[in-house]
Length: 198
Image 1 (cartoon, rainbow, N blue to C red):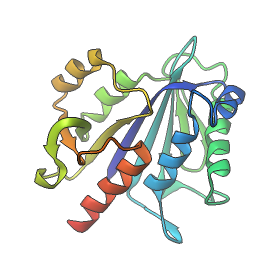
Image 2: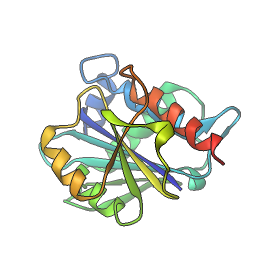
Image 3: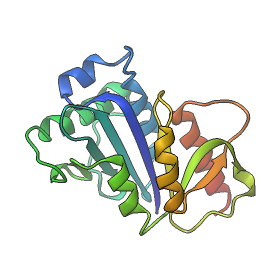
Image 4: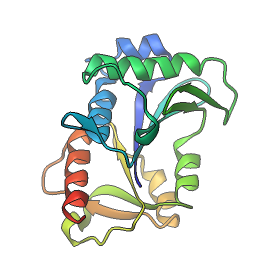
């Protein structure tokens, strides 16, 4: 199983604000692009992927929306608007949740009020964590674990205070190349690298 965590520090957890953030400074469209490239292949979707979107612009609790490809029903269309609507629906379902609660949204989609830090602590028990970093080991030199989990961010870099806690969890730093890429581009390269090794 492959897991991807996208930390969206600027993305609001209010569904209307989330939708209004498309093309604005919050760049919420990045989440739809990344979701599309993580879950889907031509005329199908991958069946071995879990994606966690962690939205952090909130006055109460972060919202972590989980998409499990093997459990997804009919998504309704392979386009950005449909995927942003799925995220917005999960945010609507999450209204009024207390800390670390979980709710089902629809087949293969859940929402939970859990922080990025707590989420990766839990994932580290099952997955080997990998974080993209300019000074990391080149991806082609990495021998990936059977259950890899890749940590990405939106347009706001990972805060420095997170690095130490991730290091304690055994996170390995990997480098995809000399150019800074969008998260949606990174997941394509990661998938390709892993696919080539099958």
